[in-house]
Length: 215
Ligand code: ADP
Image 1 (cartoon, protein in one colour):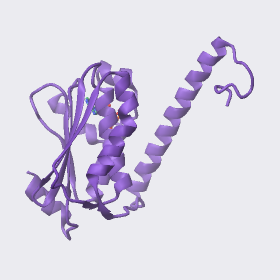
Image 2 (spheres, helix red, strand yellow; image 1 turned 90 degrees about the vertical axis):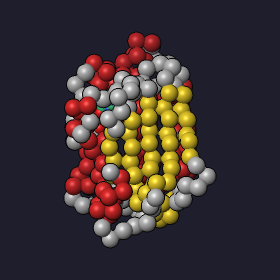
Image 3 (cartoon, helix red, strand yellow; image 1 turned 45 degrees about the horizontal axis):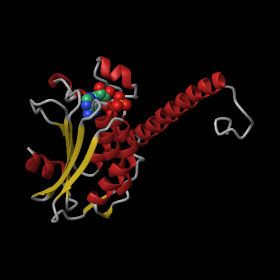
């Protein structure tokens, strides 16, 4: 309200301080919602509302949501999806959360003028979603650990970007709850190549099913 000028004119020096207060409040609110998600997951109380869902539509919406952030850095966002991509039985809101996490990380860790590509395709009985960026990349020895709670790569890029180190841990739990799998590829090129797969048909033994097809 104060920033919007609803309480009268604000001197420039106060405005600057208020902008910082707002930024910190948003970070705190983000941290709290990540922590709540994590405790819901750990207590088994994160309910998945499974229904036939177009993951292509979910991705298109999440890409649009991040466009302003990408435009600020002149990062090109693209979505590639075949016409034959079927709906998956999934919780669209939660899978959207996974996509937002991957996309916002990709935009955060990609320098000015780069690109972030999302590719969705069917692979047998799995739906594959890939987010590839032209950013700073992830050292091979960190590629498993970044999915652990609070783990952040210790480098100048991460320090500059802040964050909680919880996003990928939450993403992994959501994908696991769908009987899927998430990982970052060991591609030797620059940038990062994240991928997750979801079974198209719910299965009684999802983990086995996905392990067999994804490896
Ligand atoms: P946060 O982004 O809040 O730090 P995440 O769990 O989403 O937490 O990511 C953990 C860490 O993985 C990040 O701090 C960063 O070091 C690394 N990381 C994630 N995505 C990327 C990416 N696209 N490019 C480079 N590093 C990444």
